[in-house]
Length: 127
Image 1 (cartoon, one colour):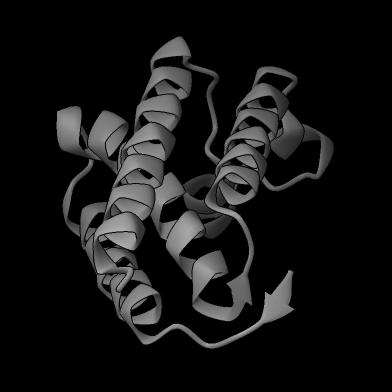
Image 2 (cartoon, rainbow, N blue to C red):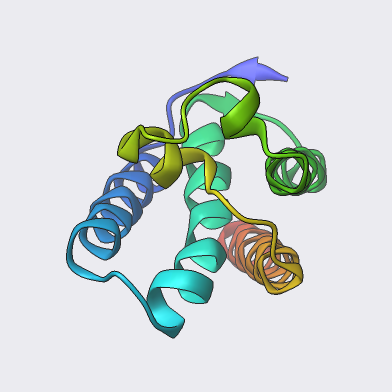
C-alpha cells in the first residue's frame, strides 16, 4: 500500500458525492433513494480510497463491503439511539436509521460492480 493521488478516481469520487447529495436532498422515498443510493455509496467509498491509496482492488472491495455491512448491522442495534443522534438529520442521512436486508444486497452489488470495473479497466489500460 502506497500513497498516490489518482485523478480519475478522485473525479469519480466528486461526481458520485454530488449525486449522493442530490439524492439525499431531493428524494425522500423510492428505489433511487433507498436502494440505488446504497449501491452508489459503496462505489463512492471505493473511489475515494483509490483516489489517495494504491492498494489491490480486492483489498479495498473487501474493506468497503465490511464497513458498509458494519454500519448496516449497527442500525439493527439502534446505534443512533445509543449515540443520542436520532434527531440529527445529518446523522440519519450518513449512518442510516433502519436495518434492511436489501441494503446489504445493494452494497454487495455495488462493490462487485466497482471491483469488476476497476479490474477490467486496469487490465485494458496496461501497455
